[in-house]
Structures are given as structure tokens and as C-alpha cells.
Length: 171
Length: 232
Picture (spheres, rainbow over the protein chains, first blue to last red):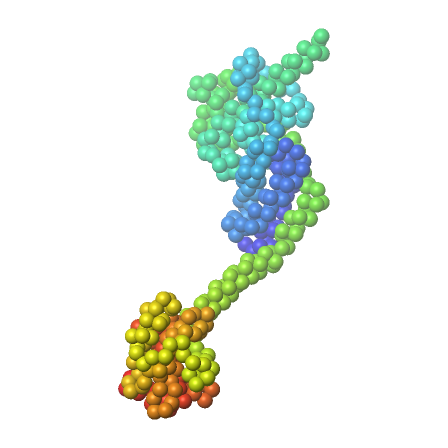
């Protein structure tokens, strides 16, 4: 793969990398910085990308590592202790009514970061577990566990919010 | 398959990340488990809801411009690294040349000029004696090597003085042979090669002795000077 071919490969994912960067950082400005850093690093080590088909996961991994390195301490996104949600007596199996994006984003923000990350990588960007493992630097089994537990918690959070909203409506 | 086990695997089934056998077992269970089936439906709805979130977002123009700059900067970046390497190599080479020159600088012309200026008739010796031991005593502590007075077969020792060659304090010993003056310089830096050459109309023979540089200068013929130095 020539450098020009590499450019074509990585630039086609610019919009997705930007959206991912927005999720990894606390502000739009930080996200913009992260996108720049990601592409700087990508072009610096472009020869290490052997398979163009792996280009998107490769970029996401660079972005994630850069975010961990650069923005971890600055990030204002809270890590939520989910003990309270585990204890909620909410039935997961009842049908999920249409969810507003804003509610879903709120619920995702209340998940542990690694679970939320695995879920959006899987559902939003369609990565396979193996790719998510490579991006997040963990085992495939860990990804499976994060997604499974994360979804159940996400449902509980959405249900609890839905119950609260319904109670507010009734009162 | 137990219900609890099947529910653990629901997400992996939804994501098509289970081996066919395991997947079949889960689906078989769901066909006869209302709760499990309902939970699978809720998880599927959730997955679809997440998939509808914003997956793409174009960065601001400034970011795109920066990335374009990176993209097209390759011809600048590579030569810069090459240039740095080249400069480093040049400096190393330069240092080697300077150090090599310092260690092996040929002083033949310098000593020839100095012989003309330091001729005993023009510039008297610091010490006037025909005793090599007295001259060695005179040089003691003045040079960074042990004083030495080379013997020139058949030549008379007249005296000596200190001089500076290439920023080094050196010995200058005066001899006389067949009515001709001979200046013999002893330096801490040996010449690169031993040879006799002509400089300023004088014969200069240079050689290394015991790690020191010996330069003999005279208007004597080369053969005579070689004989005095003990060359066969």
C-alpha cells in the first residue's frame, strides 16, 4: 500500500473517528485536538497498517490510546458506581418503548466507561468483538462480558428513568 | 440449556458472535421461554436504538486543513529527518577531521619556519650547554612528556629552548654539524608518516620515536640529515 492509498483509506473514516473522539472527550475542542493527534500519529506510522480493511479499527485504536494518554486526567465525564442500578428492582424483559437519543446518551454516560465504549463500538459502528478487543486492548471474552453486562445495566437505567418520568406525569 | 445461561448469552447471539452450536442452543431455549424471549426483544430494541445514534460527524474546517497539511507534508518530513542525519554525519566527519588533524598534523613547514627564526645566531638558546642531561633538566616539567634529548651521531649539542608548536609546548634542541645548524623539535604529537621533505629551502625529516614526534630541520642535504638521525 502506498502512502497515497493509505491516505484514501484513513480519510474515509474521518467522520467516524471524529464522532468517536466526541465520545472519548469532554469537549468539542478536546475532540478536535484528539482527531488531529490521531491522524498525526496515523500518518507517522502509516507503514504499520498492512491490511487496509483493518484501517478503521486501527484508527479507532490510535484515537482511544491517544485519549487515554492525553485526556484521561482532564476528562470530566464521571465514572458511575452502578451498585444502585444493580439493586434496582426493574424488570429487564419488559418491552423497551422508543427511546429518545438524549435519554440513551444520558444512560450511556452513566455506564462504566469501558462498557459504554464496547456497546457503541459494537452497535453504533458495527465492530466485531475481536476488533473491539483490539481497539480497547483487552480480551474478546472481556468485550463479550462488557457488552452483555452493559446492555442489561443500560436497560435498567432506561427503565428507571421511564418509571420516574411516568410517575412525574401521573402526579 | 438453563434459562440463566441462555440469558447470559443473549447479547452475543444478537451480535452474531456465538459459534453455531451454542447459538442454536440459545435460540432453542428462547422458543420455549417467554421471559428470555422478551428480554431478547428488549435487548434487540436497545441495540437498534444505539445504532441510531450519531455515528459520523465532520470535524471543523481547521481540523480538516490540519490533517491535509499532515497528509501532504510527507515530502517535507522525510527530508527533514534525512537532513538531520546528514548534518549529524557531517559534524561527526568534521570532528574526525579536526581531531585527526590535531593528532597527526604535519608540522614540517612550521618547524622549517621556526628554524629560521630560532637559529641560535638570531634567537639565543634558553640554555647553552653541550650536556644532554642539563638540557633534559631544563625541560623537566615544561612539557607533557618526559624530557628527551635525541642523539644525532656526530653532531654537537649547542643548547635548547622551549617553543610552541600547534598549541603544544615542545622541545627545541640546537645541534651543529659540519658548520651547519640543526634544529631538532620534540613534540608530544607524532607525525602521521616518517619522511624527509623540503620546506622553505630546508630539509625537514620527521619521524616517531617512543610515541613522540621528532622533526629535524637543517640546510644539510637530506642524506646527511638521515645519517645523523641514524637512518640506514
